[in-house]
Length: 202
Image 1: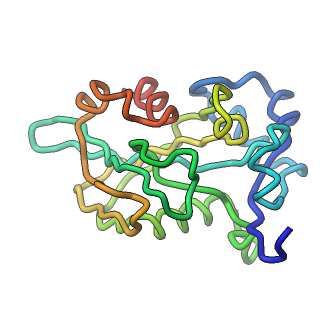
Image 2: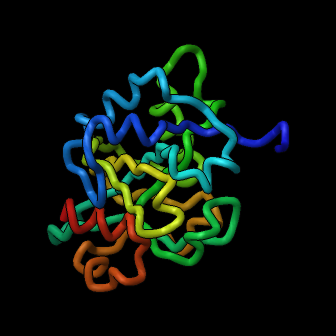
């Protein structure tokens, strides 16, 4: 193992299962997330082994950027995942979720590493020049594939005042606002988490 390997925030699967069963989209987010974030079993572990160990779940903020246009049409910021440093197993899928792993470097000054990490990921991936209101909407767990088995998504919705969002990274290609209606019509192009979030929230 490299001494410089990223250490990421994980929770043992047993902690989640003691709270209840999560599969697909779970709207009762605080029932699960509050005890998870307060658990003394939350830890930072080397990313490599965690990517293939479903006995731990990696906590992933998954932020949806919503804007309503002048015609009253609800739009979401969508992009195509590139082949850069991110999750190779999701390459070339369309997504409406911005976010990524919470890293050990996010645990600074006794603050909340989850929130710090979520905003770090947003700042790395996009340029957001709009005011917004934020709500936490649910959890996503999809054990139907190898990526899903080791990740627990926390869905946040940012309702934007204006559509001023740009991709910062080549990994977020073809970024722009797309109507929810069009995203539903073309849902087969979307990664599973995006399909689940759109079906649950829209």
